[in-house]
Image (cartoon, rainbow, N blue to C red):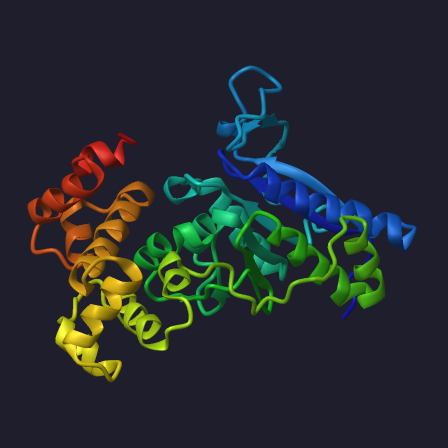
Length: 328
């Protein structure tokens, strides 16, 4: 059923939100109105009142680039005529620690009305915390995938650039929010209108949701060697319960000696050293992106104890877990 126009879109700003991701999404709607020759979309920026600054009307919500944008305080139960049809929670690199009871209540009410609800960039964290991605596919920026999976192990989390699953949506941020909005325009107004909007940004094609957002550095280094790529993928899937080099070699149909020669020739380190570095780097990512204890992170990354992890982190990154978490 086609929604009445204009479609009301609300962008909720999490402090530290991605300015680029927001701009791509908003400007796609502006351009759609221009192409369609009518006001097909209305939009507004909202925020938790506590994030707007102390002095009226506040100094706005800070983006990740420290540019502040004014936003309306998140309202209570809006009248049906004024309620948004689509709500996008726009996040940034620190959204994993964001909490807002007002946002959770607002999203729950909107879901009850049948609104389309989702996230842009790391806004997936507060949306998932409110239970709105339960039973739905979702995605997030690749840098936060490990933390997102650790925090919400029961969710169906993908590595695609965006996901649309019934009345829920999410995207990886950056320019993928442009592709997400173009897809919404295409659903409502056809491919020709969406293509005209895309041309406005010299965007030669609208990327599909299924496109992977990131190929790991490890796989890029592996090049076209199938055995090496399979071995690395196997390691990445078993960070919590590390496999022996013999088991990995057997799984990729090589001897341990052949696998070692392959790693040394292509990656200049042994399979064991490469595997250890993967686990240390995942732990480093979780330290920065989650509130998990050092002991919990050690277990999640296959280390015997917090002190065991600490020794390896210090050796590789020159910082203790506490120093690394503080940005040292």
